[in-house]
Image (cartoon, rainbow, N blue to C red):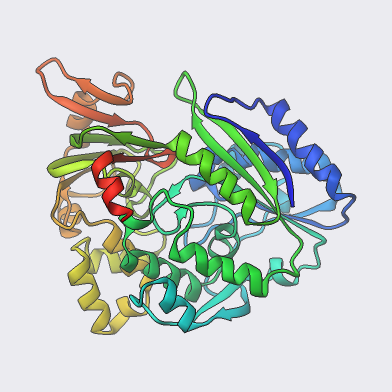
Length: 427
């Protein structure tokens, strides 16, 4: 069922246009008594799901009884982040997702199916897990809100990823992330049909049909002043909604370049990116654009840690971003990394495999810490002076001394790839 399907590369939805489209879709659903909102957390603030959650509260009032940010492995939101992202939505409605202990298993995706979709790179069963509030909360409507944008684990974010990963459990998160990593990030990024998506679709089709879920999906681009703007809004209860959003997201968010980038400078907004776990989007979203032997400079004033929690942070510090072969060897050897496959996947994703250099210029990590994780270290002050994010334009810039750099002000809003590498990666 498609309740709304609007958008184009040039469309800009005002708040009132979002309100009209959302309310029209909700009118078609009919009255509800207990509604749960499942938006992304602050790491997806650009999704505009905060505004849509506010509008959801405006529409349902006291019938909106719970708001559960889909944290996944991320740290809980602070009161300030909740206020900034969700505006007038009452703070008393917000619940905290516990990805290690707070989930219910709806069913299990068979190992044979996982082996088939992964081309036998892995063959293990994956549970379809969701937060207990979603599974057992007695709601007559669950509204899952989120942005469809290129994503390193699943290809195109949004839809049931919000349910089974964002509000999912440790076992499923570990195994889906590792599946995506060993299948190959460059074969997944920017594509709607991927092994991880097929696993989640299996979970939806076989175990979640009884849940009263409606998906509200945005496609977000960059406006004339560099601000995020909604280009598309898609509302429905099945995969067609996500496919339509993914098609527009490819047009809006994927930049196919005619030549590889020799040097890319990526800026990480300190309000949004505080860890390499999140900030490594600078690597994921540019890797297919960077030339062999090229350089990626990550200007990260807010980054002061590696992981989003102590356990993940410890594993990243211990093993570092050392490349696929070494990580797979350490996983095969057992130990803590083998029991934390999402961390192993993250370490694979964060390595250039020696193809290009990665220099991090962090605000809160030392040279010793950065180099211990197998990155190059750069001075934040020197980087900000030479590559002023307020002066550079997205795309190619030529500095006064003749240096050419490709500047990206927010890696979370896109995917950059050279034409040759993107076409080859899909073969």
